[in-house]
Length: 277
Length: 126
Image 1 (cartoon, rainbow over the protein chains, first blue to last red):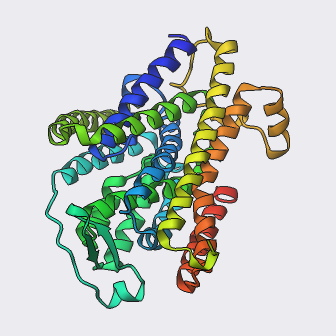
Image 2 (cartoon, rainbow over the protein chains, first blue to last red; image 1 turned 30 degrees about the vertical axis):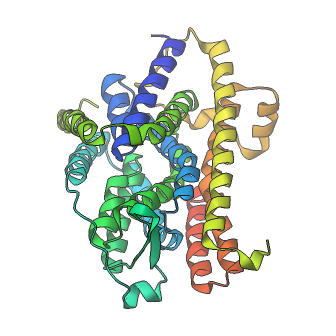
């Protein structure tokens, strides 16, 4: 395969990854990195470098659409970004010191856990205002069914903050947005309504990824000719995904995607163990 | 619209626009760079399976614009990537100002801290 064919195939694959990532809410990176590494035999460092750049593109590119819907909460996002950016710097530092096999194994485990999390959906349980959410001004409202504004508070700020440190570290180590872990922290631990969690998470992903970008660039993980088609493909795919989301049977799609990601995860772990990455 | 009347929704709307414009410009420049790259390298054989560090392909701040003006492919892609990395940073910087205009001192501090961590990591972290 020459550069032109390779680039076109990568562009198409990245578009598909971005599309599936945005439809299922897992993000483009989770399928992109295994695709580049396992299918196209791209070195794992280049794969996570290209993925990290595409993560920023997706987050910034779709932000305008999410803002219009009025779901995201700037204060919660900003406060938790202290944790994710510190985590991301640490994660990127770890990436430069972890053997490739180790990164592959951790990646596989995170994939499995992300799939598990997407099936752990529970009903929103709106928590009222309390001491911490008042003090940190994290209470908010969002448009509920029928356009009625629903008011919510926030619980377990400390636990959420600690989990975000972990989410940031994984993002920096693996070059993914780690949206699933961010939603875990906000939705499951802090009891923030699901729609608010997912849109705020999307906002945070770009800032988190930017915090590891400097280290990735200086370590030479970002190859220009590889990152360009990946970044453009994932962005276009995720924008298409956001548009057709309402017309797609997300439940069925999520099941199919989960099966695909499960096998990718197992293969990443297997390749990591036998050292074939 | 007086700035002191700025509310959260308007601020977010404005930030959303900034992010979208930044992403569009960045992807446009990157795409032009990729096309020029293909004009010269379409038949070359890619070697991404071996990690060689791409650092040598990047230009320093003093040479980048000069190579961009000459239409150098990787310089254009580099510029696109740098603009893209700048969009979330601009978003945080914008929020520092917005919270200051809202006189929300606590969140001026929070967003300023995030901005410092970001700038430190982009320019200094190894």
